[in-house]
Length: 390
DNA sequence: CGGCTTTGACCGGCGC
DNA sequence: GCGCCGGTCAAAGCCG
Image (cartoon, rainbow, N blue to C red; front, side, top):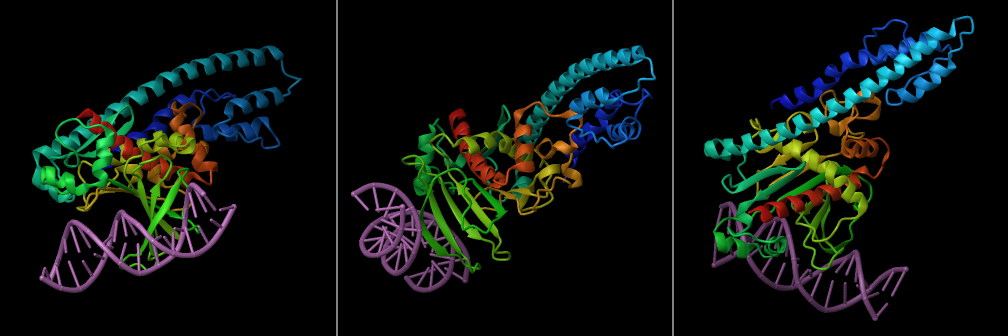
């Protein structure tokens, strides 16, 4: 697996350091090597009570620390000048930060698109090799597209050559044989599988589900339950819930199909974030080493895989590493896995995506739940988008 | 009474 | 062709 994404994103903090170095507001020395050192300076020199500066709230603490400095024996004018200097520097840095974030957004977007295009091009150029890599996908009929940060996973074998509205796609989902007869191509539905630790029989994901069956699956002592989405009439989305045979604390939820209705707010909010995750997952694998799965380059390699070993192309998210691998070395650089504590002041991502995910990871115990619903929606929107584009 | 779960029957795909 | 298996159906029962 290549580490280009890792290198790309993990380089961000390094790039940021020289900028942050200029933001040593509290040190008498104009050059502090890092925000961490900045904190030490602050605690050691200006606050005998070990005033700690949270990296995210540096601005707030800056005000407090500056106000807390009482040096009556010193002349007031140099301090005022210093404050004004700090203020102007802060404004300059904010502007610079804005520019950097804009540039980063653009670069990230371009990079993701290029990765996707390269992957598709490689598939077409070397179908035999790629067939070995994605044995379950009909390479010539599978496509991955990214638009506006949203990923579209589609298998053109599922739909006719002429344009078809989402409803038609959904209809075919319920009658796979018809699609197979029409195109003489095996029908494959994309799926999203989420592994999460839960003692509950099922994780609530904001949608309403109705159980319509339960079976004992081979090789697993735990029954597999079948659910159908009942949030809207005729919604074809289904999910299977089963405990992991090896670890009964792990609940495996597999989603299939496209919602034909708006998602609940929690799922909708997370949909954008997980679409980014899926984008990274799909775009990071131009040279997979595993023949059965396309592992996400860099950040998602430890928790998400795109498996095409059939019969269904399946994205699997492993959320059983609890807590989430926020402290894993190669995840630190990914926007998806930024925690607030690790975000330097000027490197907070501009989109609400990062805010939402970071907050969810850090504080929301239902993160997994929301994530599940969101991923489910991604597959739906992706297929719909591709169907509409064709 | 409507919606949901339960559970055995049924169906189609697939491998031998 | 047969049996296995996964997935779905639908009748019966439960529950608020």
